[in-house]
Each structure stands twice: as C-alpha cells, then as structure tokens.
Image 1: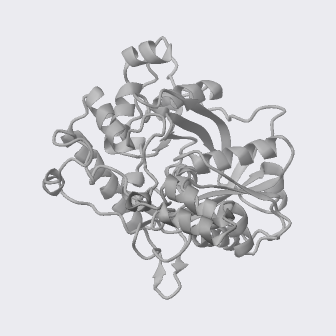
Image 2: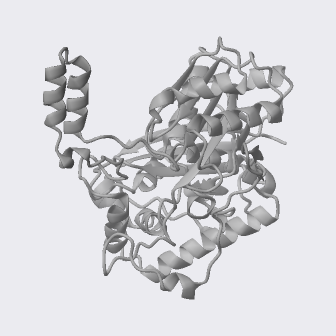
Length: 440
C-alpha cells in the first residue's frame, strides 16, 4: 500500500489580486510607563520607530506613498501623530499621513488599511505603525469648569468675568481622568476579564501559570536575541534603551501572594496575570510584491486574508480571537492544523485561556457563533513562543505590528508556512490575519 503523506501546503496567492508583502518591521523597546520614557511625548517614540525602519530597510525617504499610525489615548498637541512623527523622522513632507484608532487593534487597522490601499492600486509602498504613551495622558477639567473657562474667554466686561469667576465651586476643580473602561457599559476591562474567566471556569492557578509561561518564554527569547525587531533608542539625557523592561519571570509562590486587582475579594485577575501599562511604538514597511522586488528587497512574509469582528461589549468584550479565527481560516481555505505559528494578543491570562476554551467548545460554537462545530484550540507548542503582551508589554496602539512582525520572524526561524495573528479590543471588537512565509 502507498505510504500516506501530508499534502504540501498550497500558497494563498489569488489570481487577479496583488501579492502584498511585509518587507520588515521594527519597534522601540517596550517600557513600563513611568520609567525611562516618562519625560517624552508619543510622537518621540513614533518618530524613533520610523527612523529605525528607515535605517533597517534603507528605503529612500520619498519612496513611501503613505504613512498610517494607530494610537488610542490621543495627545492633544499631536492629534495626527502619524504626520508629526513622519516629519520628525525625516520623511518627505509630500507623503500624506493619517492616524487611526481602534483600541488594542489600532496598528492592525493601520496595516490592513495599508493592504487595502495597495490592493486598490492607490499605493505601492505604505508604512504602518502604532504608538502608545501611558506615562502622560490628557487629564481634563470637569465639564462645569470647562464651560466656565470657555465663557470667561468670551466675557466682554470685567463684571461678567468676575461673576463667572465667583461661580466656580471647589467641586468644579475635580479633574477628569481617562478611564480604561467601556463607555457603553462603564465596566473596566479588568472586571470584564474577571467575569470572563469565571464564566469559562479558568482558575487563578491556571492564569498565574500562563502568565509565568509568558514571562519565561519572553526572557528566553530576549536572552537568545530572538527579539530582533527591537531598535535601540537614545533617550535624551538618559542611557540608550535597547530592551523591553517589563519581562519579570516570577514564581508561582510570589504570584499567589497578590490580591485580586479588580473584583475583590474573590476575583482571579491580578497585576501579575494582566498586561501592564506600557510606552512604545512600532512600524512596518508594507509593499506590493512587485515593488519590493523592483527595489531589491527580500520580503519577510505575505500578508494574506484578514477579518474584523464585533460582539456584545458587556459579556463578550474580550472574545475577538474566538470569533475572528474561524472566519479568517474559512476565508483562506485553511484548517487550524495548517497554521504553524500563532501569535495572539495577551490582554490578561484569563482572557487568553477563556478564548482557548471557547475555541475548543462545540457548545460555544453552536450557541453563540451559529457554527456546526468548534474551530479547535491552538496547540501551546505553536502559541506565543517568544512571550506576549503579558510579558513584553502592551502599548495599546503598537501591539498589532509587533504581532505580525513576530509571526514573520518565527515562520522563518521555525520553517513554517502559515501564521495566524488574533487580538481582542475594547468595544467588543477583534481582528485576525493570516500571514504566509515568503519562500526562502
């Protein structure tokens, strides 16, 4: 009898559709907020990532057609941070640039917008990226105080001004801080993660074990020089920063001592099994394959099918990967077993483990997704092997590009053909993309 063999995996190129490639990707070191980057501004980090991309690719500064950046918490002075960072990095001032926001998948949106512009024939080369700067966030006056100040600006007489000043009460001076909470439900993401973990029966111990895995794998990847997308950054008045500073492998005993961070006293989400507030920026160069080859580049990967999904922001806030994964596999004509490399955004250990359980549940597939059967759970021996957002850090706007660049690097290192990126985002949204290794 003939020996049965695995079929050679097909390529996902489509007739009549341009092949779009990732030429390269870089990022600044991801640092815990309030550390070495504390005195900078978001566009400083974004500019550094863009300069790093220019240096690494050697692309002429006028050969890029468009620049797109993702960010979540806007710095008021640089609301179109893509433009300010591009000018600061020395790109031609004739290259248009815009900024997108879609919570934790903002730079995913920047990349897929780039893919769309190239596919539509509008552009041949687009730089996409993302930045987040949590060391300094805009804090506003209260609504009443803002109203009074705007009226003061318009007041014509001294009497009118004095009357307005006299109307100010101590309560008006209470500041308004940006909340990492859902506008529609007023619930913080940590609360949602805790409820999700409880709904899927994910224990505190499982979450701590997963977080420890993330930190241990990140430490190993850092020590072995696998995080080659990181570019050094000379911070003015400080040392050169050359690596992520939030990677801290602990012990199960140390982690068990921490109290719940959100749902007290019985919650399971803690500071140790959640991603932390992070400053950082990323950038990738995306081109049509023909343009990349014409300029003499050896691309890293093909960017293939992608989907966006959206669910109920109360009970399914963080389940984006569970909804997006089967959809993007269907679009590509692939099965879960065809994927060699998985890179999922780790918002919380409880969120990752809940998604893995949801993906492995026929009941969930039938009840919530209208599918006949489950998609299956990604095997951990292919999953986030160089650490993830829990350990490397999660600058909201920048993580998507890190995920895609990591998939490209892992495919090359591990000899795989297909990678899958997935992420959840505030508002109950999510994203997934299939990436194909570029033939060596």
